[in-house]
Structures are given as structure tokens and as C-alpha cells.
Length: 343
Image (cartoon, rainbow, N blue to C red; front, side):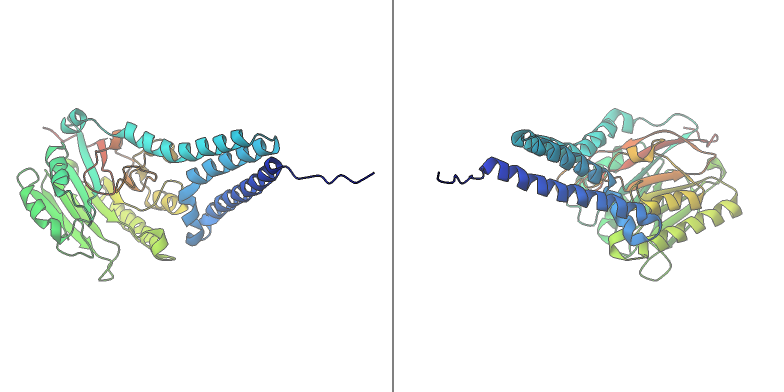
């Protein structure tokens, strides 16, 4: 009796191939999550922590795909993977869209006793300065912290002088490019620049008795991928400055700006813990709405712009502003605890 040779069915081969790919992707996601956890021990590993949400979504999608493939449901596997992939990218953008303040909300002044602070990376490559100017002119803010606000935008700062007569910063220096706009008189100001070795780009101001001698520090920290220890060292430096300022002045402190760190990062937690400040965002920081990227596509994925406040202050509301030509969305926060503020 002649032997019968079994022919491998293409569908089974496809399932095995997809299963192998799924297992590799799942293993990569687990490795990424483990590397992020090790970020508490080394800043290079901490880079992976910023992708925690995306890695979790990848792991879920790969795991469901493998299970469906093992059950012989190829079409279901592809569908599940596609749904997880789209959801992993779409959910952060959707949450960001829900956090954007309406035109009425952001143009209505905060109640007495509150101040409104806005933090925005204006982006050196911003090609829609008109949108940026319209936002800065319309937002009912007391203080605005601007990063990547270099010499090309100096004329804009002058045009805003009627609304914000008190200004400080280093916008004339492309290596610093920090600027602070205020409706309230500034008693003292200073800046630092990475270029001259004085520290990360910062603008620091102190207000008078009308704001309880409030100090505000605007920061623009180095991206974690730019230097092995750069971001870690800058966090250490800013946290030490906050502690020294709190001890010497005995007054409220606000730190706002582009941290280039997500709340998943151990370096972000290091700043929060060592500075003694509290995050102005959600009680569970991982729910902070994503502010980047907003260009060339408006599809925010990472929350890297933050506001921190000292314990005597409380945040009554925090959210995002509209697209203003930058690759970042503005962060807007109403802060209470400055009882002498009046309008």
C-alpha cells in the first residue's frame, strides 16, 4: 500500500508563524517593562519607563493574539492585535482632548484668591506664531512660563507687554530661551543656562507680599535620551534649589515647565520626592493628560509638561490648552492658597 504524504496546511503554518511573532513581541514588551522598573537604579534604564502605558498595551495585544492563534482563530487574532494597537495610541490622545479647556473656561479669570499659571513649550520650530500670540493674548492667566522662547520670539514678548507688563527671562539667548510673563510685579529674577554651565535652562522669579512672596521656577530639562546622566543631574540640581529656596524664603514655591519626564519615570518621582513639592495633576499621576506631541500630527502620547506646587497651595483645576503651533500643548492650572490675590 503506497504511503500517503501529509501536506502541511498553509493556515496552520500561518498560525504558527503569527504565534511565534506574538510571543517575541510579548517577550519584548515584558523586557521593556522590566527595564523600566530597573530605572530606579540607573537613568539609562529609566528611559524605558516612559513607554510603560504603550508597553502594557503591546503586551495585552500580543498575548490576546497568541491565544487566538493557538485556538486556530487567525482572523480574530489579527483583529484583536489591531484593536489593541489602535487603542494604545488613541486612548492617550482622546484623554488629552477631554482635558482641553474650552475657550470660555480659559478666557474667564479665576476666582479671587486663586492664580492661573500656564506652562508652554513654545517650540523653536513653531511656524504658527499667530496662533501662539492669540492664545497668550486671550488666556486669563496671571503667570505664563514659556520654554523654547528664543530670540525669534522676542518681538512677541514686547507685543504682550500691555497685558503682561512684568517679564523676566533669557529669551535673547538661544541656549536658555526661557521667558516668564506676569500680571504681577516681580521683586527678583534670575536665570540659568546649560550653555554657560550654570544649570539647565531656568527662569526664577519672586513676587511680593500680594502673592505671599511666591517663588516660581520655570524649567526646561534635558531629554533622557540626550545624555546618560544629564536629566538625572538636572533633576537633582533643581530639587536642591527648591529645597534651599523653601528653607530660606519660607514662602510658597511653584515649579512649572517642560520636564521631558512622564509620571511613570523614576526620575520624575525623584524630583517630586526630593523637592518636597506635590504634583498639580491627578491624584494618580499616571492619569496626567498627554501634552506631547501636538505636531506635525495632533496625537499626544506622553505627559512631559508639569506643574508642581508646595504643600500650602492647592490646585483647584488643571488641564490643557489648545493647539498653538507648538509640538506641545499648554498646561493650565488654577492654584489656591494665595489669599491676598484680588481682581
